[in-house]
Amino acid sequence: MKSYNSPLAKKQMFYVKAGVALNKIHFYNANYSQFGDYRRFKTGEALDLGYSRYIKDTKFYWAAELGLTTRGCYYDLGEIYFSDMVEDIKISGCYHYVIHHGIKVAPVIFGYRFMLPHDIAIDLRLGGYFTYYYYGKSYQNYSFDYERPTITWNAKSGDDNYDPYFKMQRKYNAGFETGIAFWYKRFCFDFTYNVGFVSYDRKVLVPADMSFEDFDDALYNNPGSLDWKVYNKNYNYNIQFKLGIAF
Image (cartoon, rainbow, N blue to C red; front, side, top):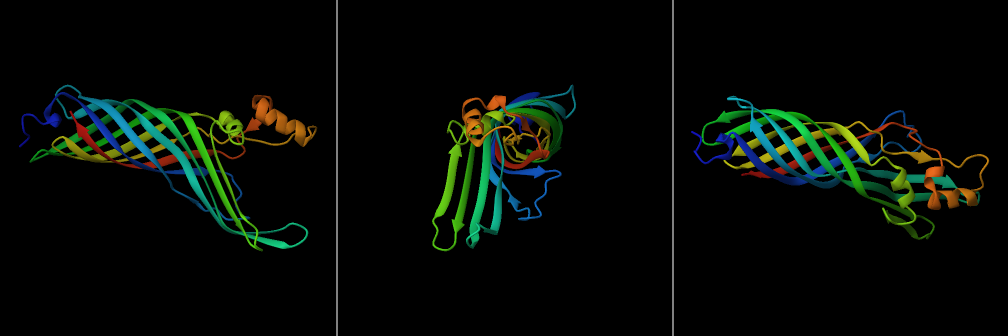
């Protein structure tokens, strides 16, 4: 039987869920035949502050959430060989990751709670969300052979060498999420899967009629004057594991 003070028995409740997200980005129409496609998951934070209310006298409910989320991925390119016209060079230990941190709003979520004995419930839901990404970071590592040094490139939004790209990448997103939560009294373990449908990764090429010096000047001083395009559609998704408590 449900205890009288259980939040699951109330008409409405507030809750907090926090945990980790496994992020990945899927590129469509991209040609990775040269190096292979070695994208892996990149971890990030997941936080939701939510409110839910039962619809009439049923266990169907609607909910709304505000929280923090991430998008990104991790590339492991393995070993790469190329020639610099003097010798063949092998680059090993090549990896690159990008991670963006954002604010998520999920204004409409619908779900159903299957109430079981002993204050246990199983919660299924489906909804949509919007995000705005306010901070980004990119990291690259390359280890050369022939006693060449390891090269690392560590940058974040606000740095000169990454900020133009972050400014011109789409910082908004929208998509859907679905999930299942296992409740015991006021505590839960939550599994969430969400997908964003806005291609964020816009790139810019050096125009044929522009010198590299002029391109660099425009890139760092007026990036909006260049022609940024989505050359390959790229959609992000993440899998979240969270612990929660209801009030």
